[in-house]
Image (cartoon, rainbow, N blue to C red):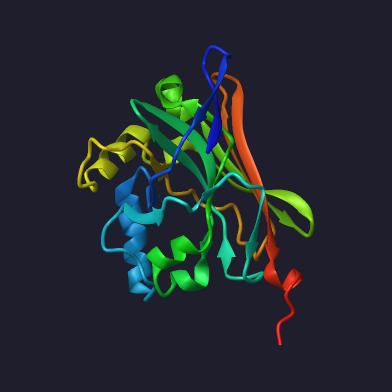
Length: 233
């Protein structure tokens, strides 16, 4: 998988990255006390919720795509979430942006299996984590969907809303059998709250904006339902 790395000095370089393992994190709000309070409320209402947070779900290494189109089974019960993604490549860690696209119906039955249903999407361009770590909290994460055919802002929050990269990395390494062996690991951050409730959208777009260095990462994808070509019995 090829990525273009945008460096702080304005230079670019192309890297070949082989994803070996993917971990999707969840419930990664920086204020974990508030996150736990929300979970307690869900449990009181009888809504399934984890016993502790953050949560982590392993995803197969081939469930990652830069493609702008992929097929889905139907036009309901699945959706995307904007997330930053960390790519561990030797001694370097890169930052991208993408979506944890999940089958929500299957998620009610088995979350780890639901995570395998659709690919994680990711930008074709990356930043060096070392170039942005000193102003990490100034970066904004966004997503858009289409509502009645019009592109509409769906998520927007500064990264202060989530565990910072260093904390997320530390917590994740504690889960690995060999914490020092991270080459080829891809770590998705968990997401932020949406601005409104929405039904299915065939379009999803994500963005990271760095106002300090004046640059953005982004990607978008469209979904095609199998019923567009298969009518069945």
